[in-house]
Structure formats: C-alpha cells, structure tokens
Length: 74
Image 1 (cartoon, rainbow, N blue to C red):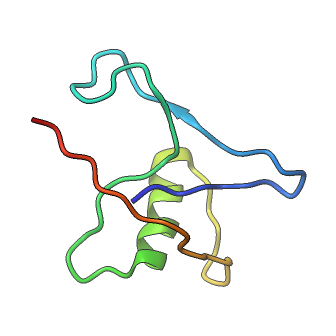
Image 2 (cartoon, rainbow, N blue to C red):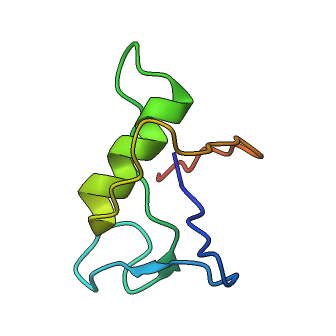
C-alpha cells in the first residue's frame, strides 16, 4: 500500500529508502507499507501516513484509492 500525500499547494511527499534496504535501496518512494489482515485500504493509508512520515490525517481525511500494484522480490 502506497500513499500519495499531496499538499494544498500541489506538492507530493516522497521518502527515501535507506541504502541498506534489500529491495530498492536508496530509491525515492511514496510512503506506505503492508495492509494488515482485515484492514481497509483507507484505514491502512491513514495508519501508514502516521507510521511512515508522522502525518496525522484524522478520521475525516479524504482517501481515494486510484491504483494498486504489487511488488515481488525474487
């Protein structure tokens, strides 16, 4: 689950992965993480925003899923 956090002035928030990460080291990526069992996409997005970058959106935040993908490492 990745989350596009866009500011009111149109800026998009990215995070940089550590160079020690196994998958995609040093890459600039959208904040995100794994969907927990039984968790909705919307709840996951709000949780990941807080966990990954400290952004607390609140329960009334507008969350609109617009695409999904899965990353597989071999």
